[in-house]
Length: 188
Picture 1: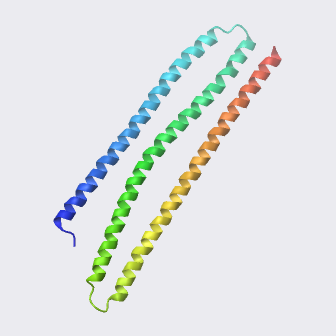
Picture 2 (picture 1 turned 90 degrees about the vertical axis):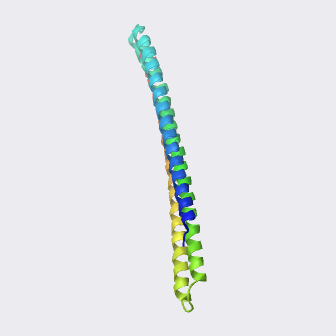
Picture 3 (picture 1 turned 120 degrees about the vertical axis):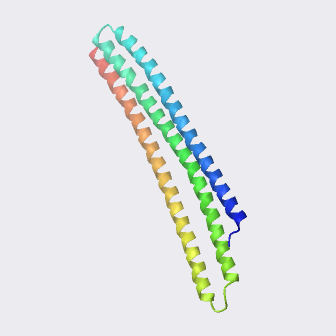
């Protein structure tokens, strides 16, 4: 049985975990806000620069060349923004995952201790029931570990796919820029 001191200690640990996770959530939100503010500032500055460049265009070829030169940086900035956004989400999620895994490990240890204590204090002839209980706890622990491994693998696949899409987008932007520049050069 749990003593009142153990219950108070468990509650205190749970509250500390809750506060730590809340702080991590706010930290993630702060990073997201900073990212969006910086992106908005950069977009405003880029917009002003593009407007000035458009106002100074003298002919159609120069306009085509200007358009071609603007696409690549836009694609690169979009890719960088997406990467930062993914990094913020991944790091915040990892913090939550570590806390969750820690709580689960602690819970598993407490359940194992409870089962061991019950086994030591079980009446004679209850060995089969104790063995079934231990087997159920072991099976639950193994199932949880399998789920954790699957989630980690899925996260790795998602990250690899994100990186592949980002690289493909950057390459497409570069080839589009080259094609636009070549088309503009042919029209001259």
